[in-house]
Image (cartoon, rainbow, N blue to C red; front, side, top):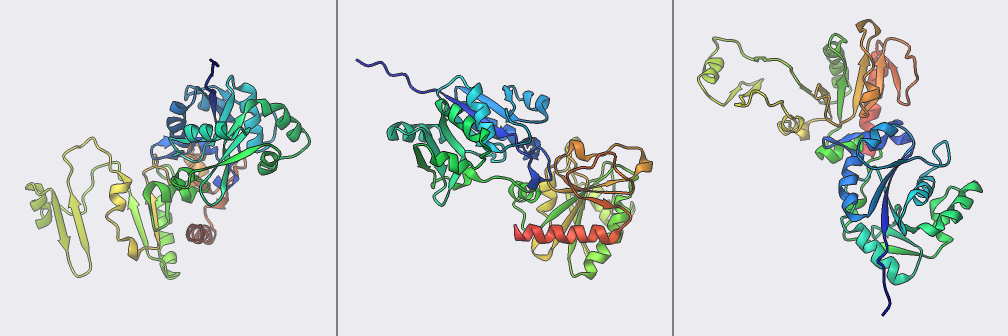
Length: 371
């Protein structure tokens, strides 16, 4: 009787890229549905493998907080996914590595099982997933004995992942029944459409109190209207507020106990709704659900800073507050009245140049619909 040891697999989450299409922000740490993207991937992949590694080249301490070993590329200057695969093979203590990107938050729960079964039946060395239309090369199962060959390939200056795969016995594994498991988030707009399924572009205005958010909005909105755009604004208030005055009929009725009070005239309609839970913060999704999306071209949001959607940061030097963008990976541009000490990898606009800000917003809208 022959002893058979079932092959072991290390999961390698590839989070070592530059993320240029995401404004240079570290994609794995970008917030999506109230968690960093990498946390979603961990939740899907960790139960499928014997060991899990995170391949990252920056923010190492933050990645270590997820409780798994973090490995850097052996090559410098962000050499691409093959460099991360090599790092994974060199660090793994298993027969195979199973690689997944950090920007695909819902990889298949059958990824390891199906990939390994197909690979073993075929007798090949590499298995690559396909969604039925094209291969997904960063979703790969690779035998660790290929590490030396990959090292030589990279040392020769080669970087093309498909060219290296083609040099070895490879099988494509069909996941056409789960194409959504390969959906990746490459642009800030992808976070928005995935998190909220939004038909209308939404842009946040992020700034400290006193920066002039409301002043800018009152200047922007008329100009956007002049260009034919219908704009909605959603604002989060950190204090109690009333849109009606004490003594008015609607105020008296609501104070009497009506949980919802709707006032309508020929020109204006307002809905006031009370909440029994004074501790609960309003949710952006609840606010968006009340908007008539069919009549809108753009939604501007003031507040809701902890939610994941594209934002424009406003920064005034005389406020004496630090920049927000280093800690908010959803900020896609900065409008400032000063020269920044470190040049960020996102657009920097003149806060006092309304035309430049308008141009940025109209380009943002075009790109949203194009993508």
